Image 1: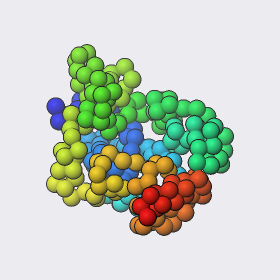
Image 2 (image 1 turned 135 degrees about the vertical axis):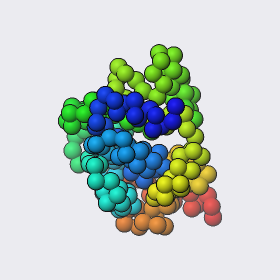
Image 3 (image 1 turned 180 degrees about the vertical axis):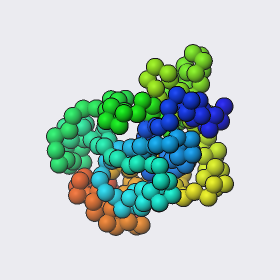
Image 4 (image 1 turned 90 degrees about the vertical axis):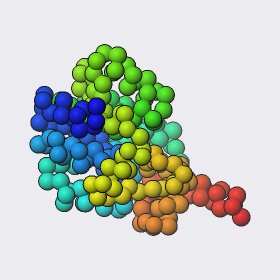
Length: 228
C-alpha cells in the first residue's frame, strides 16, 4: 500500500491525527503534506532538544502558511531526562524533567488533544528493530498501522529516495542536511556535523546549543585539532 492508502484507512476511523515531526527533516516534510490532505485536523508535535532554534522555526513558519489545518505544539525530547540526570555535555535544563518514553509522550499528547491516532515517520530501512516491528504488523494483517496502540506508520515501506522524490514532485521545502553522507539526521548536541552546520549557517542557533550544552564546544575543538 502507498502512504496515502494507509492514511486513508485511518481516515475511515477519524478525521484528525497527531503527527510527530522534526519539522525540517524529509520524512516530516512529506508527512505534514500528506496528513494535511487526508485529515481535517493535524496536530504536529516537535520534540525539542534545544528550544527555539531559528532554522527549525523557519520550517514551522513555512508549514503554518501552507497548511491551514495543521496546529503546532512542542514537548521536551525524551532524551533530555537522561541528559539532565547525568549532566550530559553540561546540560542542566530549566526545570526538573520527568522520565518519559516516546510511547508515553504520544499517550500524553493524545490525551491533551483528544485525538486517538498518531503518525510516525518510521521506515523499514531505518534499521533491524523498525523492520521487525513492521513485519509484525504485516503478520497481524494491519500493514502500516497498529490498531491496539493506534499508531500509524504511513511511509514504512518507502526509502529515503522515495521520500525525496515526493518532496521534489510536490515542490515542498527541501530538508535541512547537516551531513551529506547520511540521509537520516536530527538535532543532536554531540553530532559534529550538526554543530558545524549551525556554526556556519546559523550562528545564533550555535550559540543557543552551547548555552544549553556548554561542553559541546569541546567536540568542535577536538575536531579542529584532529583536522589541523
